[in-house]
Image 1 (cartoon, rainbow, N blue to C red):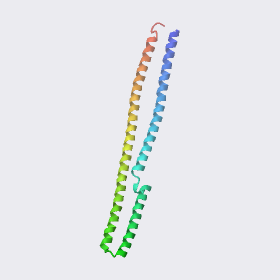
Image 2: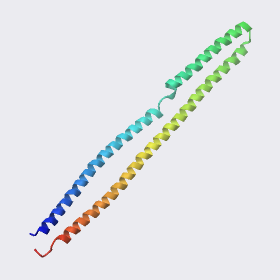
Image 3: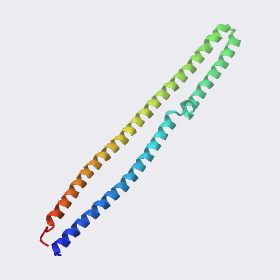
Image 4: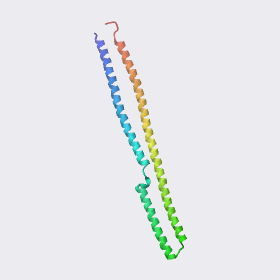
Length: 172
């Protein structure tokens, strides 16, 4: 057996080993990347559900706003009662003044509801942006996998062709 045949065989074996090892390492890395991506998707979905479906009116800011309006209404009602007693106004006048307070409460609740809608729209936009980022990441990875598979097939074909060309068929 000649030295060139040994080197040709050794070259083929090393090429085969590196190809198989590359495929196995890539599969392990791909599996790990998929697990991490699934974990990130689950965290994103949990964040979305927690924030989108959370009760905004139960937040500290909303409770504080409602408390301020309630305190203002209470003070206004006390002042209206005192004014009515001192000035001797009609009950209709007191009712009209109380209606103003109720309108201010209605306005506060309407503003809080509008803020909640804006908050939900922002959360939804962030969620869609994150979902699109995950999709683009997966599409990029698939494109890279396709290029790597094509490259590996070409390299394997070239290696096989070089091994066949390097062998001295019928000259042993």
